[in-house]
Length: 197
Image 1 (tube, rainbow, N blue to C red):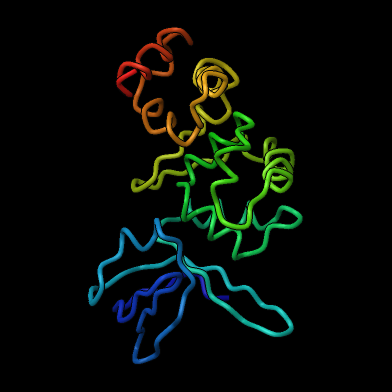
Image 2 (tube, rainbow, N blue to C red):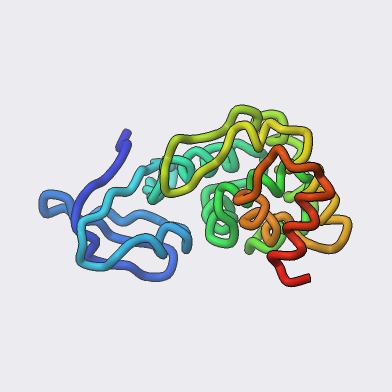
């Protein structure tokens, strides 16, 4: 099993990147979010997942461990293959996916290509409990375990804002920067203020 690749990024096209290690180019399917953090013709490190099927052997590469962890959780859901996992991680960050699942936000998940309402509901149903304790010390994407496990203020604020018509994907970046000890009303007020509403 290939855990990671470190080498020169020689090709970056829609949906995949090629990392050259000791003269061998490894093609990795990559999300748009991973590609945003990569620079062509520079040294990169990708954390990888190898998918082996009867007709194919493919590598999937991720810029952060948290994105890889999120991908593994997603493809563990019945009906979610690697391509759908990459599509979800192209539209949403691991943090946004986590908040969407914890808030039951079907609409945010259906933004990804190949994800309909039924599949989004299944993802939420199967992963809601598994997300407790899912976190990372990775500095590039902070998934705060306490926020994910918290059934209190932040998740209540996400749920309340989704009733007002805001998707978890829109409010998550704002809420993640606020103090989780604030009341639900204060969190909602600060979020609306920062979003210019």
